[in-house]
Image 1: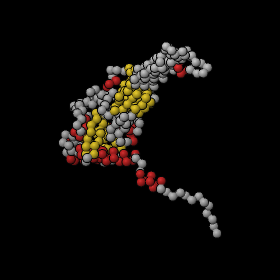
Image 2: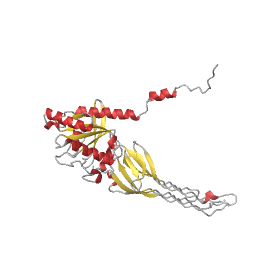
Image 3: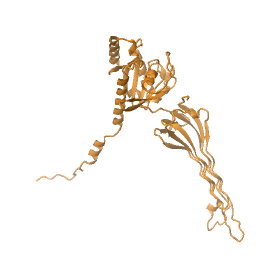
Image 4: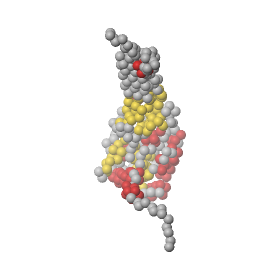
Length: 357
């Protein structure tokens, strides 16, 4: 299935049905009176997040969505039927923006979350609604309300526990294919990965959703290479795995290039917890691995893991470090129940003034 993370679509809700002007006519009924029914409501347009999608490809070939109008009222107090709603099914993590692609309407981050993005028009009142003691034969009815129409942008940001970043050919896709059942394209040339890939890895009975992001090069934030468009897919992650190939001529420059692009992109990516790993170490001897790891540790300020997807070296250690960091971030995001319970059980302070003998 082709990956698509952004789509521009046109939506239109249904207009309300018109009210009816009618009078009751029946044999032996001398004063039938008005019996025009109300019009039906037009259909709404909803957007709903579901779990069995991970792309917006459904909106690649259909960009116009219109809900049906409400039925018109009829005589004998028959009200028009409501128009059918339409629901746009999108992946969890989809954001809906106004036509300017900057004003956020709603962010769908949970399964089953729904939002009405266009309201159907109310149906008009029939003449039976206007009957009164002083106006017993009204000959007027309301038309239905107009529909709402707008152009919106759908933008997908994948929801993953950890993101894999690095320069092209750093071994990101190979690592994802090794630790999960994902089958990303792997080849010995830059920019093999053209769109993000998701995979589910397991370590110590814990599951992790990993997102493999296309490689970054210097100037990606200005559109060089593939650019930084896909960095939005790691905005929701709790940790980053930064792979630096052991085959790079200058490890420090390679590391700083990616870090510079994260900082230029913004949105808090540079502040996320980062686990740095030296990849493709199966091509080096132990002495050189130790030397390169120390060189990389000096610039990143943390322990550098050594891994090789070809020989499975360091795979479990890396996954375990990612799982531990994700768990720590989840706990940090949740309030401490013990602290809340202790705070709610504190005795009230006695505000009475102290007296002295």
